[in-house]
Image (cartoon, rainbow, N blue to C red):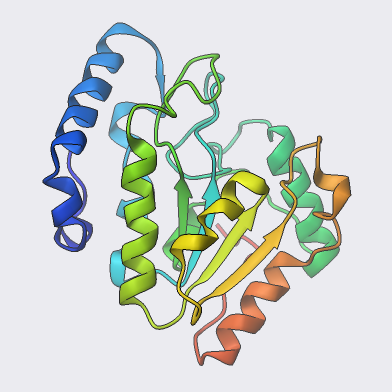
Length: 220
């Protein structure tokens, strides 16, 4: 279980800490004892699809989907052919409202390949138990990911949906852009997520900083 080399180089001080070694051992043990999502080989998929130097946007989720056949290592994403969970359904609705296109499937790997780091604050979860791994140490690791990106990049757009994600704003330096709205879950989407035009907001911020935009309308 290793990160891609470019991420490993940039996160080395954190990866060498005792808590992270203990975290990896705990997670490996959990995979042998319980059903854990995502699958073991997809644990660091977000980092594999979006190299450190290529990160233009961070889309922050909470933890992986905890039902079978949903989590695939990217925040809010599910494998092709799987039904959209409620939050992804609402993201798709807002994509239509904002840009006039709809997702042909739920695998958001194309976004990741274009520079959107699809990061969950916890990278694993036990089947059927949302937030079950929030105390394992993942939050320390993903906080460091956000901090290192904030310190090393000249401009990133951070999409922080909901209160928990917005708490991470304190880790982000002022030269970056934060796109914030209520979470897309059915409990909060009607409180301001719908109509927030996050995809347009992100691309406008990228244009302001002479960066190429994200093609949010999936083509493959």
